[in-house]
Structures are given as structure tokens and as C-alpha cells.
Image (cartoon, rainbow, N blue to C red; front, side, top):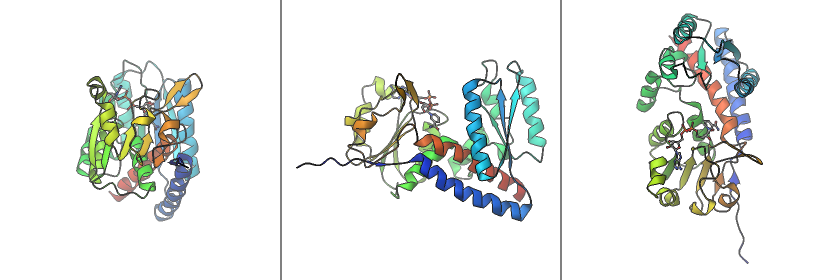
Length: 291
Ligand code: NAD
């Protein structure tokens, strides 16, 4: 009788727990060596409900690890100039070690310009051009949080990425593009698919080749389970609100019958992403005390 083998689940909550324990130890060691704890600031413009909920989960994780986390709410109508001045003040404050600009920002704010005003050593999310350049060269440990979380999931499978056929679907600046660089650093053979790949009718063909598939698009169950190569590792970054709750970009129930490992949504990449933000905070702190 034929038996179906289900994928092993890449449990983000469990992985986040393990990583938090490691970071907690590091924070204790750094505190005993320097007498200080990293102080991280999240600059939020306005106080939109879902942004606040996300910030609260960051605060909870920071506290679990033993870091100081402060949420600063600026008025919804703060000007670009006022915001930049405020960032420069934080840059100059030796008691602030990490800064992030909470997204989304209002439409009158130029996010890239603000991100590039961050002191690169305090750039919690690894989003200013200096850190992106350093990531390309493999010269910084401060890297965008979601790609870092995907890399931790892949590492947890114990599988070497060297020479593996990896397909990334989605080429955004915060997920797909930086992730492709991190995968290249591990000598994977990387293909990056995007909207034009779908328009050309080639998405399924690329996905069918993937030994490791990472999807970060934001379209509910765009990737059909039947497209997935048998035994592939599947990391689903997508978060999509549908009538019955939250689903990813991959048709999970079918995909899990073909994959060897798969992340659930929710409970896969998300919980690890917040921990990666804290890891960047610790790295930023280390860079500043080393100076
Ligand atoms: P984005 O909108 O900035 O980019 C989407 C990418 O998908 C683009 O490169 C686009 O070309 C591509 N795309 C769109 N339609 C496509 C199609 N039909 N076929 C192939 N490619 C297509 O999105 P983003 O900010 O990178 O986020 C992607 C998803 O990941 C969203 O669901 C978001 O909520 C989620 N996300 C999750 C986390 C987390 O921590 N779990 C973090 C960030 C983003």
C-alpha cells in the first residue's frame, strides 16, 4: 500500500524560543563585561492599531531577551525635516544603540531618505544603503530581519545550501533581493522570480526545479502544492488575510505532502523575524562598544 509522507514542520515558535535563549545569554555576558544593555528605539509615526500591535510584540520579545526597547510615537503630520532632525538626535545619543522606523509611514514621508539618515551602526533593520552594500560584500552582521529569519529556518534543517537549486519568488527590497544575496553567500544556485516571471507563464516551471523554495509575494496560495518538487524545502514568507484567517503564499495542505520540510503560516517565518531584529540590536550594540 502506498503511504504518503508529510513534510516535517519548520516550527517558527520553537526556533524563535531557541534563538531567544542564545541571545539572552549573550545579553547577560555583554552586560557583565560592559555594565550596559542595548537600548533600542522604534520610531512610529501616528499610532495605527496594527502597527502598535506589532510594536507590542517587539517589546515583549525584547524584554524576554533582556534588551531595553522604547516605542516613540511622533505625530501623524510630522514633517520630513522634523523627522530627520529627530533621527539625527538619536544618532548622536550614546545611550541609544539601535533605531528603526516603523512601517508603514505616511505618504508625505520619504522612507528611503530617512533610512539613509540612520547612523549605519544603529540601523536596526539593516535598511540603509551602507548596510546593504556591506551585506553584499559580506562585511556586516546587521542584515534585514525577514531574510535573516528565512536563513535561520534553512540552517535548522541541517541541509547545506552549497550547489542547491534555490528559487526565491518575490524580489522586494526587504525580502527577496537581500535574501538572494544571503543565499549566494552560501553558494546556492539562486533564481529570483517576480511578477514578470508569472506574466511570462514561467513561474511553475521555475518552482518545479527548486530543491529549496522561498516564496515572499503576498498573494494567498499563489503557489500550488502540485508544482512543488518532491522532497523540496519550502519556506513561505507570505501573510495573507482571507475569510477564514491567515494563509501563506503556498497551498500548504497539498505542498506538505510533497515537501520534506515546510513552514506553516502563521507560526513559521514571522516569530523568528522579530528575534532577528533583536539580534541586529545586539550586533549594533557590540559595534558601538567596540569603537
Ligand atoms: P512586495 O509587495 O514588496 O513584493 C512582492 C514581490 O512579489 C514583488 O517582487 C513582485 O514582483 C512579486 N510578485 C507579485 N505578484 C507576483 C506573481 N503573481 N508571481 C510572482 N511574483 C509576484 O512584498 P513584500 O513586502 O516582500 O512581502 C511579501 C509577503 O511577505 C507579504 O505577504 C508580506 O506580508 C510578507 N512578509 C512577511 C514577513 C514576516 O516576517 N513573516 C515580513 C515581511 C513581509
